[in-house]
Length: 253
Image 1 (cartoon, helix red, strand yellow):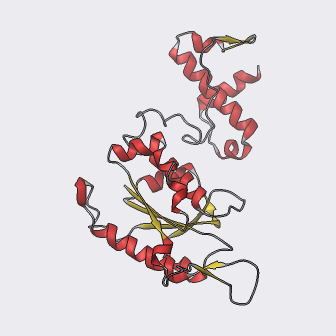
Image 2 (tube, helix red, strand yellow):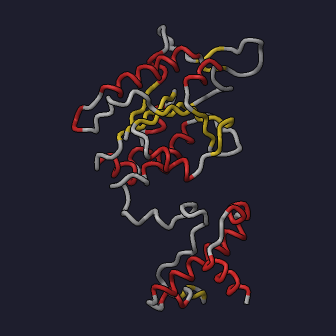
Image 3 (tube, helix red, strand yellow):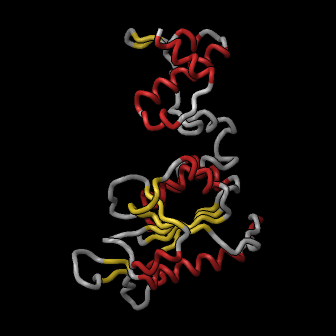
């Protein structure tokens, strides 16, 4: 999989790409991340990538020409690149282009799974007061990581890269993501490690029992209770199985 990031602040990704999960996915050949500096596609010695908005107003707007030229160059290069033994994506003419914007649809684990199945994902990081509106028709979708405003889309791009990379085979142990929050529509159950007792608070006895079936049922019950308490919206959308209904009834006794 290739993830391309179009940004005006490429240095923000230097240390991020050294994070263990990302680095392991790259090292194992399941992920390639390329950081593209939009300024490289701006004309003139000053490389202007922004300008004042038509109609007036505060702030600056990213110009369409540098962004779209960077996008076209990115698609063309990765459409034909099959070097170094990487998977040949030349048979697929369309990359998935995503603009990171507070106006986008909320990001979710379901979307992370969808992105992880894409051969080439392009993330465009906005900045300033926004981007020229003529850029948006060139994207497949807009995505938001939350109802708040960031200085730029770089942090949002890192969130998406991290969440996608950990789903790729070879980045984590095969079972590491199967029981995480949101994978089954529920929050993850509480976790404990050594010591068994700390400042008078003990790890639940069931987790030390060695009875795998009891542990599984306890964890499922705790996931249900935690989701109902912390994320009632998720709980309401979750279709309870017969076992789950019984576990909730048991917890109320």
